[in-house]
Image 1 (tube, rainbow, N blue to C red):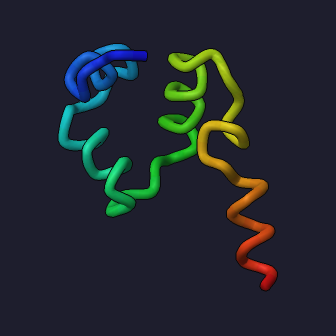
Image 2 (image 1 turned 120 degrees about the vertical axis):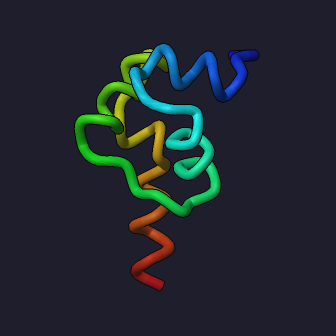
Image 3 (image 1 turned 135 degrees about the vertical axis):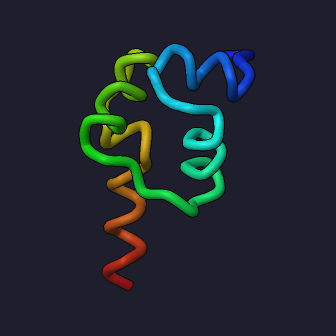
Length: 60
């Protein structure tokens, strides 16, 4: 989308540090934050967080 982490954080109503931590895999977002991020990106939570691939890889 071309946004900075700060811009994304503002759109989602969280801190820039939160976005950085989510991107680095150091923080698993709450369902509410996941929902907000999905809305910002006009997608669903499953697609945004690649959940199908995550569970497929987990089964191996």
